[in-house]
Length: 366
Image 1 (cartoon, one colour):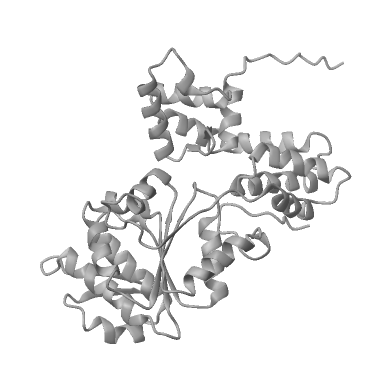
Image 2 (tube, rainbow, N blue to C red):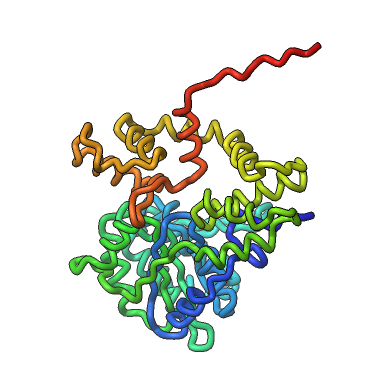
């Protein structure tokens, strides 16, 4: 039987867990002239949700992940490439002729892909940016309003310290299109959209995407697990381990299904699935662990033991708070009601590393 769970890519089709209320809310914004900001930790399904929404609406959209932009110029060229991915080159030729600085396009016949660039001697970052954003406005029509999705938007200030000011000055003059800003760093996103002195202060609506409700996720997992006498208990154990995190729930349910269908495991199926996942990612977690300093390592170990680092009297509160801030920025720790490790498998890996090694008894074979 084909595995009915998917992770690591956008959840689409049957793999998408219904978020009816959130879909309806986003569609309301897109039906108006308003823009929308969506904030949630990484791997909560922001991208899958928005992609499903815009595809159901059927309007043209341009999508750019800003974490791969390293400068204002690279942001502009990547945005132009994202436009080309949605519109045929023949339609864009006429519009590109009106650019004050003409972009150069190189076509790769093998990959069927265009690479864009601007002549360095002539280009200015601001002019390039204005022309590309102006192109978005021209492509949007009353019958087919363009939707522009800027993913990981908290990177805007890392790309260029003035990029947020320049984007706002252009976007506020545009009409007839919707911008959706996605962000996984809550503190940085709130700084951009909720601080009064910020250029993007209250630039549209704000939506926080939470975990999928337990009952909804329970039914989703239960219906897709292979037929076993204890499906209900398996489903509860999966959600207990993952705490209803959208990504890790699908990951664990995928591995549980494999243990049942392929390995024919019948006892402690969830435990076996967790151990199989830890073995597969042991080197990844080892490399990740080596990137932390000692203060951050100590904070992570405390969180893996369900302790509260800020109550530890052995370490200065300011030091611990700085550590938590770094780990949250890196996406390793999240804060909802309290601080917690984002990845439950990494949490389990850390717990195992702190468990004293016990030699297994030697089996005597006669």
